[in-house]
Amino acid sequence: MDFFQSQETLTTIQWILRAVIGFLFLLIVAKFMGQRAISQLRLIDFVMALVLGNIIAHPLSDEHLAMKGSMITTIVLVILYTGGLWLTLKFTFIEKLLDPPPFPLIKDGEIIYKGLKKAKISVHHLLAELRAEKIEDISKVALALWESNGNISIFLDPKYEPITPELYNIKTVPFDLPRTIVKEGKIETRELKQLNKEEDWVVNTIEKLYQTDLKNVLLATIDNKENLKVFLYK
Image (cartoon, rainbow, N blue to C red; front, top):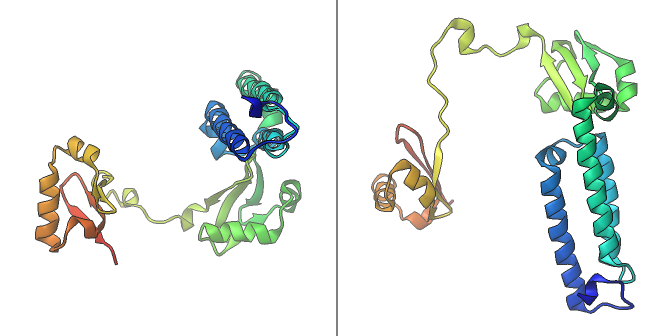
């Protein structure tokens, strides 16, 4: 464990061991912090990402620094982070400080310039976000909110919303997510067991319907009605 302590020089193997331990340690830390911190980069998450990255990076690039101090500091920061999240659930004023409420950028088809200044974004950025949502006209937007994680929530005016079957009381079939039973020429045995199907059934069905071998199948899916869809390598 000499590589764990500060050294005058480190061998190639010792550098590799430091990198492996640092990588695994960060994976554990990220898992402990939870999926929310990864998917939604709020103010407190951004600060944590900067600090943790800086703390772990130094001993991974400087042999004169031990890893123990960095790992202890990281653990303390993660405890403070999770404690801060707990406090936001208990005290509203802390939640507003760390996770402030959204504010409007567009309202009733009009751009709120004060909102743009507060969010520190340009009209160009706002238009790019609208294009990403397939919205070409600002006047179609009833409300656009700047969220604390930097995303923009956009709500169209009801008259521009797409027509849905519910509007005309049209009956629809329940949603059915097809299951993947073949991927890159390999059968997904776990999915087949849940469907009570045998591997021979998959192979024979593909050969019969598509006149091809299993190795030529890029993807094969099946729905609840046993409709099989096969995508071949091209």
